[in-house]
Image (cartoon, rainbow, N blue to C red; front, side, top):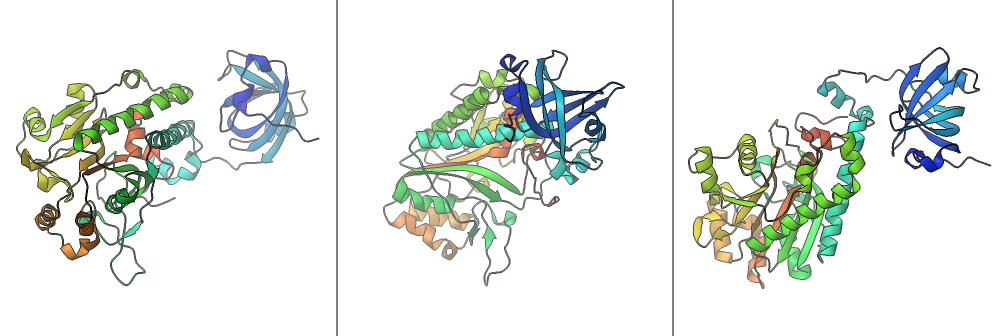
Length: 424
């Protein structure tokens, strides 16, 4: 009869003490002594210290086994406070499944080298915990929108129009006309609200930005939403509710991950609505800058630090934002758009109320030097039963950076893609 294997997490329990268990995983650490061999075994759930005595039948294989070898082990659980997770496995039997060659990752290696061997560095405890938090973020986003009555809706990845500016488009070969990878679902999403009213998606976006910062990727994931009958204030309220829902979810489900990442979560625990609101003009006064100044990552982080909580930065100059953003009727040189700035990160999302009037949209296309014939179908949405509507896009990697405290956006994705890193 084949052994029934348990996850490591499930055997780290006082109720398991003295019981015979069967586990399987990979050798995370190895330490040899004259009469004992200590192995730290990991699986996807946790770590456990395994002890092999010299007189055990497992000794010969324990001598041979190497770091990152896969194996199956049987033995009794013992409570041991000195062990990494408080318990150890007293091994009776050890079976090597895949004997690993000398593992290339050791201490004090450069970040660039670790990115070169990302296919192996994924096994690190840090990335394991971050990717677990990331998974819960995705889950919480889906849960929130379903709870709020949104329909999940997909837009095409291939597109012929720029959504966020032509300079950052990735052109795709193989077509008889210019086709690009999507920067955002938004233009096609606006068509969807006339049928489904409240829609959302979680999907990749592609932007050929030449930025070499700690928060830019060429391929990233966005949580985007669009809703009919939603005005600017309603949009910001909805976004607050989404962020707070995600934060509360990960605080509940990722306690172990935050502990292993040494993430002090007091700031997340105290998060509440409403977030601060700051107009672009007022931000310039705080920074000592003039109208038209394009805020940097550093500026955004400084503003958040001054106010001590997330900030909706609003009312940017019209020509600084996207062509579809609605001008504020009270301040026509600005738009009803907002970037959400998070502590330590800066911008993590952007959204706006959209232009509804056909003539106003035509004017906007001219301001941004866009050809009206390229946006014919988009213009049609203003001709056939247009309604007030708003939407936003949330950068999931930047959100995960904030939640986990990771210093670089490459630390929160399995295989980062930038203009300078396309492998492994």
